[in-house]
Image 1 (cartoon, rainbow, N blue to C red):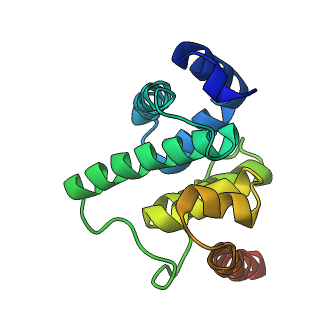
Image 2 (image 1 turned 180 degrees about the vertical axis):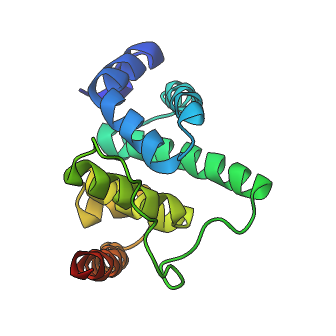
Length: 175
């Protein structure tokens, strides 16, 4: 698809159809409060539609969708953080993963996924953005296109989080 040759509405509809699931996952990755997830999804879609008015194909549509989505989500989280200061932490200061909910019917995989997402929710927006894009299987270069970081900086952040998670999940397994 060559987005510059399409109308704003057509470009948005094609992008929303192709990346709608990714936008919902992105919103769940940023917003821990399930009652706010759909509001964030709508905000992202609104911003995405508006963005196609000035999109000139300077990057892939995929990168553009993630860039817009992450920018809206970061703004959303910053506004939430102002209302609840002191809740988010950086990679340097995060020390433990949230505890596992004791749900007898939940599977171990579901519990691990929940813990991973809860840990990601505790990260500062820049670190959260990198990890959510990594989990969407974007390359370090693509993540750099979205975030403005170099591919090397992206790889370093991903490695730090992987080490943190490996240590935390290994300790949990030793109990």
